[in-house]
Amino acid sequence: MRGRETVTFVETITALSDRFLSERAFQLIVAPALADFEYDAGATARSRLTREHFAVLAAFTGAIWDDAIRGNVWTFAGLVFMPACYYCFFFLLGLPAGFDRLPLNLIAALGFAVFTLSLAPALVCFWPERPSRKPSSE
Image (tube, rainbow, N blue to C red):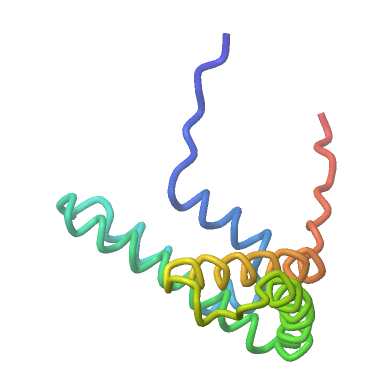
């Protein structure tokens, strides 16, 4: 029986970076943060280690943002905007009295629903292609 293998924080961030980030963003933004994390991990207290986790996550988020900005962000925004208009139209058709009579928390929930429903198809269209894994020669 094989023992359970644990996945480390660094392996998780590296795998997510392989899947979602360009090589440039990984090498320039995430890799230095991971190097700092591994260097400081051995000689730090738990609270500092949490801050270092946060620093790596912030670098990963910044790399995603950098890739989004360098990519075709206007096409992505258009793909989000089209279904948002579609869903808003149907919400407005269903509310003949308009939004004036709805409570603020319901309007916020509808806005969140429209945003989520609009973001999903755009993410599917822009989902990065999975890198091909070469079969192991065993």
